[in-house]
Image (cartoon, rainbow, N blue to C red; front, side, top):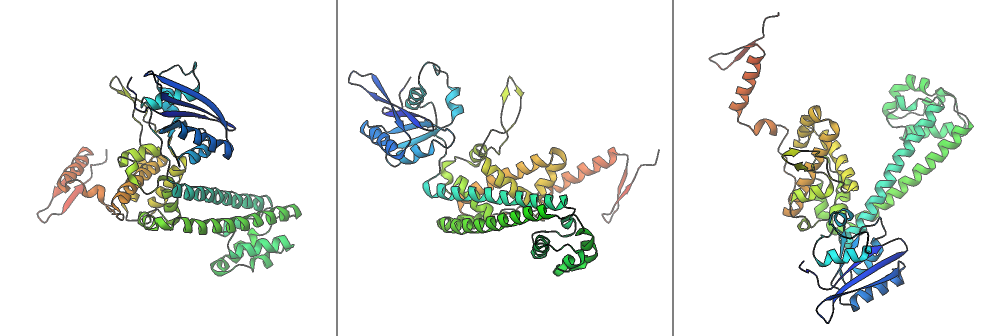
Length: 420
């Protein structure tokens, strides 16, 4: 088998150790392999990097192992090209994987060009990704805490969420603070309502009659304190993200022109795919990498499961959120696509299809540095010849037994079939 890389190395990464195998040509025209084990502390990783450089290694391959691959990857990439390899690709290539060390097997496949590298974004994008992912986790935690708050109130018989749209608004917070302070009179609590909520005072008085006890006050006070902390933390993270994403502000603003993609979602999408679309040969490759494209499994003329491959779960969540928002945007192509697919394929598949369309559009927009061009919610009607559509509708009516007559002035009269 032809050797593609003469001097390469394979790394088998664990939490506390890294096994490195270096493959180089020897004086006799053959190949020699040397295997060494290093620790994962910074000093050991620097020693590993220096050893690879001393051996003249030009390419290093390592298997993606949880988060443990990141430290050696970031240390070595400054001096030697590093490929992050998909574990599934390594297993698909036949070989003596049970008889040789993992590091030697990885090195062997890298040398013969049997694997390809996974996408690892550049350092500025990685920094942005770390922040946006952590912010997403905190936002989800805040949503869970808000749900816990409502559960505690339901347990106490306080039906505030049945009357107020947002129990954490100004009126809701004032009522909760009064409940924690010991106020139980529903009339007094209802008078804390502000704005439009004052129109619901009779319903509020009934909803605020309950069994709010001391233990409820302790739990609600703790939840409110945590919500305040999370709000402050999310604000600090957003401020830091604004600083880090400043070099990519133009690309972020381009993405916000897509229906359903707000500023926060655009920041998260850029943190996952970067701004350089040359890394993905086409929009289809990007969608496949993200796990947003239907799978292909055809054998002997039979098409089997079209389940999508596992992809970037973070990106999928952001695209699903954008798709849900786009489906509620009136007059847009994405909304028409969702409402066209949901009755036939279900809401989940419709959301994924819309997310796929958004991702494909993002690839083209970042490649051409252009804004979103909406086809309109009537695209599915305009894309076909109106005469062909009219003939199809006429055929459907006649199939149902209707009598269709076209008057000289162009008026169409449809006579339904007589009742049986």
